[in-house]
Length: 414
Image 1 (cartoon, helix red, strand yellow):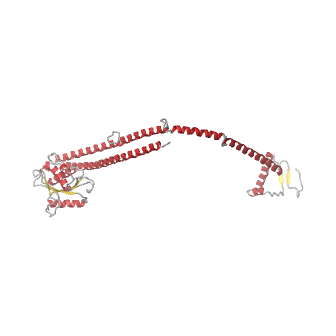
Image 2: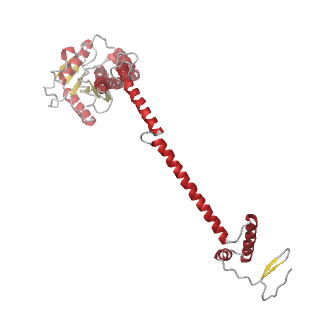
Image 3: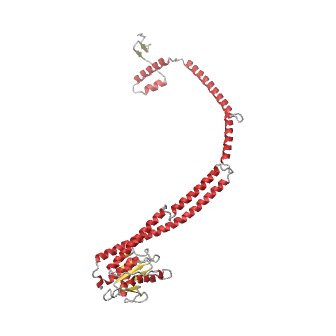
């Protein structure tokens, strides 16, 4: 180790150790790094160690003039390289893009000529091999196929059409329900000991031009005829209560009912609340001296409730639709009223199984309700089919107009 005077020496060095005394460093970077460290002494040691390693590995010189000279040389060399590259790029672009002799310009001009010739041949309207001719043939074939497919889809007579299957199911359901109701009515008539006959049709009293009361009377008369009952229109005559309530009275066959029995029928071509309807039927029974009463409505939409036939003790409400004139529900109401009117006076009903009879009436009511719903569905389905037919015709008109316009547009291409 070399020893200097303490007051003059700041660095002591031997083979294994470096000691610095009274060393002052003013470099801003060194001051900033050491001052920001938690251990200034360790930070200074690392700065010295790292600087020594970097200088040894890079074999660098601390001569700043030499470094500046080398950077100047590198900058000049880079500028020359950039100028040479720009010149080469300019020469290459001029060779490719020159308006007269450029390679790219010549290639694009040749390609444009080839494309123009190909398009002209493809869309030549006078040539049968052109795309226009093929497109016209394809569009016409597609139009014919689409029209045929739509007709098959919407034709209710076609076996492939969903409308055909839907209509068949509805018709089958209506027919089955109608037959079930008919069987129930026949069974009910048999249980009451009534001789069944062919009911007169309502053709002679078509609803057009007749009052609804006349239509109901014709239906009641056709049901009463084979039973030997006697119906009578009394709507214009005052009764026991000094009023005209009660439009039709039916006198049951005296041979069937001891001492005479009758029921009254009130006709309504307007809506009436249930309580008011029952009160009016009670008044009609008292006014016409009847043991039972039936109020007949001209539409399912007017009747209070949803069932085509309902009874309440000795009064009932029923529907005889003036548009459909299906008398099944009215026939059930007639047979019910005849049984109620005679059950206290007729020996013919002594052996009737009341529970069985009520079960049959309930079953008939359910069948009538289902049949009414099915009939409504069938009506809606028919309306939907008719509407689909009209829409189909309109669609065909639109398709035809569109195809004609396409054909006209293609024909005008030159």
